[in-house]
Image (cartoon, rainbow, N blue to C red; front, side):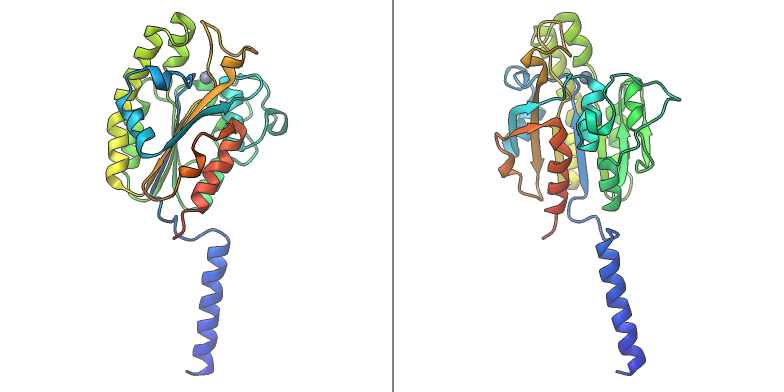
Length: 271
Ligand SMILES: [Zn+2]
């Protein structure tokens, strides 16, 4: 080997190490990472509703019913904590409202972590105020009227590795109208479960996936966002064919801690 070739080899090695170090490497073995907050999902509903899709994720993965939302437990405040991994006091979003044209999130979010891991990032949400969380680490985002799950499927079918956040609405309307855990509420969850089935099937068929189901807050009677302990409760289901999720079984967690849990799972994605 000539000196020139040796130097070229050293430079190439250094460049590869440098690129790996700054996170420009391959996304890893998790090809599809999908996080689905089902708005206003009370953990007890997972025990009482007819939900074959979610039950199958529980049985092939793991779950806990011991999560806690932000204070107060409200949609945008909880989602901002989920995305940033910071409490409302730290991330600055302590009110539950946002309109297009107002300032958006400035803190880095879970999408920045996903982007640095080379994922195509998608964010589909069903409430206008969740537009507050759109930042430049998101490749595709939409606020569809009622076909968020269809758009999510189309996104997963595009080439590459995907990191998808899919906010699912429905229980947040049925809860205040008929009551949390009412027959109508449980029926709405069955409807959501059925609607999610083809997306879950698609992700599983593609293999090397991580699916996380959670929520932003619960509720009681026809009330949510209050200081009643039931309003703070959250479920978490984690299912993967590529990383071990067993250690999350029955853990106590906070919505603020979800970002770290997801990042840990992405980091473990190295064989
Ligand atoms: Zn909500």
